Image 1 (cartoon, rainbow, N blue to C red):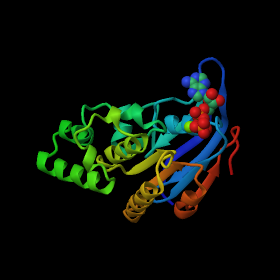
Image 2: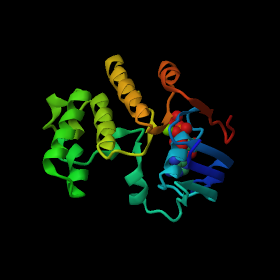
Image 3: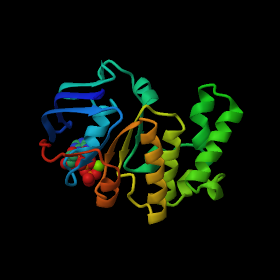
Length: 217
Ligand SMILES: Nc1ncnc2c1ncn2[C@@H]1O[C@H](COP(=O)(O)OP(=O)(O)OP(=O)(O)O)[C@@H](O)[C@H]1O
Ligand SMILES: [Mg+2]
């Protein structure tokens, strides 16, 4: 298996003293869908932020594609690993749904027609056409989550981290998301998915890691 994320003896303590992990060692493989489960507050989101380099380990090291997150910029990690936040509204910033999808690629200089075509496909897939011109802030929570997922997928990540992606989605939208994830898996995109949704886990899992109080199996 091709290790893409190498978590080596990591301990993390929030400023103020809350120690979340003690000597956590874990390898995540490309081309594998790994679920991260565990009780509220056990550190799932913290681990996602550590992998994304948003937080740095207090002790130990995390390597992405062979490089320590201490030495990588947030931008260079974000170019390769897509991260959908647990609270999608925190990653939406544009003035319209269409701009949310297109801006990051247009900013990077991609061809405008291609970017718009790609965004239109995302709007179709995630049933967001009717809110295309809306201010993301006013979308329903489920629509916000779909928009956050779609905007991350616009960047063609090599690996994907999804924090509670089915939360607040209705059954139809969970079905759409499942289809999207299966298509990504067929393209050998690996994923780390934080979830409590048993059916969803059962459908997509290659591997489950239960993270509780710093312990895992
Ligand atoms: N910024 C912070 N400062 C201090 N403590 C924090 C901070 N963020 C999280 N924590 C604490 O760290 C622990 C792990 O939080 P985290 O959000 O990673 O849990 P989680 O497993 O994602 O929980 P949930 O299932 O509720 O999303 C919790 O006890 C939380 O209170
Ligand atoms: Mg969380």
